[in-house]
Length: 249
Image (tube, rainbow, N blue to C red; front, side):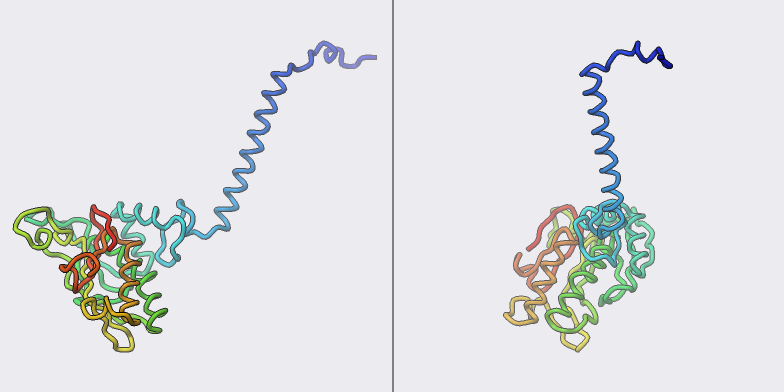
């Protein structure tokens, strides 16, 4: 007896239909695997390796740090959020859109990083962000590794200077003209040692090793890093900026 007579009227699925159904079944399985894999990566991979995770000053450098850093440096609001979340003390400086050297997106760096001397300079937020990451992930670790002590302060020649490159009467503006560069002249350690660029950079000792290490490490966070290896004009300082041109020397 046939209880479901309509079944006998059904035609077998064609080979094309079976292949089509199998294709979509494979796609569904692949999608489920991808979702599970993405969840696992998001849950267990280090946040510094994931581009969709927030940039955090506390995280060590990872696979996605450079991408996230560039994103934060290009977004004034996000730049300040990262600094604030990282415990960096700063105050917002109103834009100065007029004059020979207008300023925008600037902050006054006050604390939460190795002190600068002269203190509390005004700089662009990207430069402040670069300094904070360089300080946390390059300068401090290098000093402890090479000199077995911490850094007490970083001496500098200034940030803002309304002038052209090399102080020439003509030519393009320096990154200093927009407070987008920091000239580091010396590092003072907690044990009282003072290491200067002009006095120690080229020495074949621990002081020279440290100065060259912090120069090279700065290239991971600043766009242009110029040292005595670049030219005589930088014999006494490290020029660190977050400007338009990339150079590490």
